[in-house]
Image 1 (tube, rainbow, N blue to C red):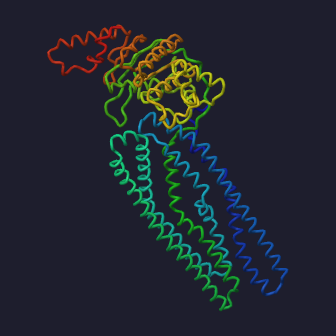
Image 2 (cartoon, rainbow, N blue to C red):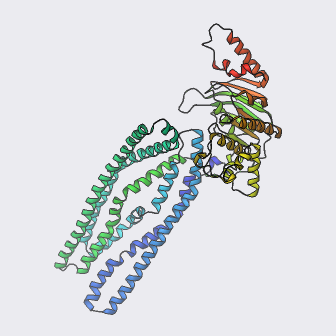
Image 3 (cartoon, helix red, strand yellow):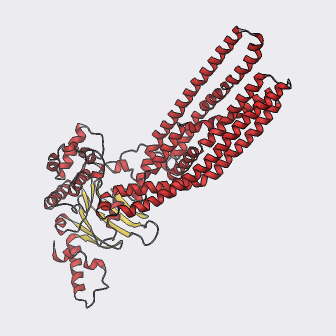
Length: 591
């Protein structure tokens, strides 16, 4: 059996399967281009047979055959367009989940660096498959058919058409060389423009309250001007080359007509050959001229595909995972090390501890000591650089998220709700059913937010808005707590769960911790207020990413108090480490 690391990367697998559509596309394109000879040969036969014989029956027969041919060609074009649309939709259905998963994982592993650009790239590739921009690529390989047909009419006409076609192909190549770099730079600048605009809208309250709109707008405008300049440069070059190509194609058709007329005068060709060769010439060069006009879209789709290849990398498609038994809640941290993004000193430096099922641990330390980073590692959101976090002996980093998530409740420091109803958010967007809704109400009651939700205009059906914008900070935090408790998780990690709570909310939180502890759930708390420590069994103290102390609550706080007293007796305390004087409430609160 292949492991996930041995699976074919998702993008490669999809493109390999997409090749199945190439054969019918080739046959349809071949049929369409062969049938495009109809008008030229119809004209030729009318001049040769109908006008010379004055036969109405021949004209009718030729017209019926030509009509059937162009009707067949139209049918093939419809089928080809539908096939391309189907392939595009199929690619989107197969790759979009993989890309969204990869984007979420990237954003979780590197906060502030994740984006949904890969989904826009996929949409650009899909749109290319359904747009007229792809037709020159499909039709260009069949141009030799038309050149060969012109050679059969007369070699001079053939050589004129071939030499003129070579010039047009050279213009297409020149278009590629002159527009590739400015379009690439413009695309990168446009991505930065979108990112800055999204950031400004996402932080609209800060922008408005602190008067930051004008400087942000100036900075955004600089990026916008850079993107516009690159697009304008590429557009001007492409337009100039397209105009030259159009002129050359029309001049070439006129030259073919002129040479054909000369050959007619010399009795080396018929008037039908003159007209038919001009029609064939236009058809042979049409894909090249169209390619020049649509080259910007082609380059954009190619760049988007390259970004997709780089982003997805060797990531396999998500496979169904086998559910592991519900854990009891034994948590072990084995020498966890976490490197800082971009290098520098490690965020976590060898943290190790053990918790039994049902124990409550307080994770404390000064600001920037690594508390939130450790919480993310324990929840499985981040993968440690070294060491392991084990839940009932299973490495949480290796445990499939969709299975692990059923047993882990996580309340982050920054509460983000998703656009939808309160019930959907609490249910973690599981499809609502009577059983699921009962679990939603159960989680809300356990979190002490049931009455608050009932008091809202639509109760559990209340829309929270984008990022929970329609709720207050305290409401978001309590609903986020209910979300963390949904499904009776075995491990619950709460990062400053009372930072936005009033006295009533904090009392409800204390009741929640007591109830969870009674059910045997293992709980990790990051908190600064002393009142919440009443339910704590053990305390882990971090300082600068290092584990300073770990043990029973009373033992750790006694040690912190003793350190504080020793520090108070020193004549100069300027060089005392931050943890010896943190937190101040530990000197006043003896639990």
